[in-house]
Length: 167
Image (tube, rainbow, N blue to C red; front, side, top):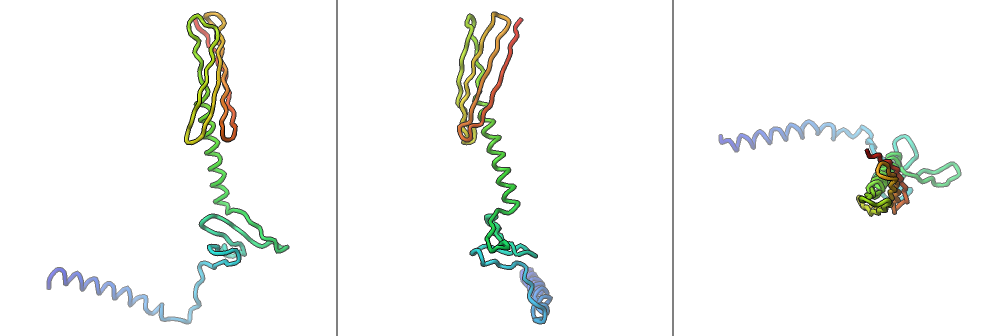
């Protein structure tokens, strides 16, 4: 017998064993059907009951609804979706804050000058910010600088102050 025939016979025997092992369970119709997921058609397609409750949720978008005692429909988001929304908002605020920090310039006072003004525009992951800073020199040993930046999406504000001592 060739190698191919032996492999085909082994495959058929294995398949027959799997089918034979499942046949009695499928033939036993005395067991009630198990309902693992109960469809909730009250709010449209795609909703399912959360097991043990009368709360319906759409697992695709997290839309969660139920009837209150006064027959008013309560609509919210699933806890996971709410947490994801919160984390996304926090990440967006952090990106805008980073854009603001990048936008705040450091003005350079040239030799012989007493004042400098600088401006920057920054863009980070679609978030834009503008920064403006100035510096004042008090002789050769001391200078101060300050800057402000503002994000242009949520108007996040950042400031800084600096002191330089030279000797």
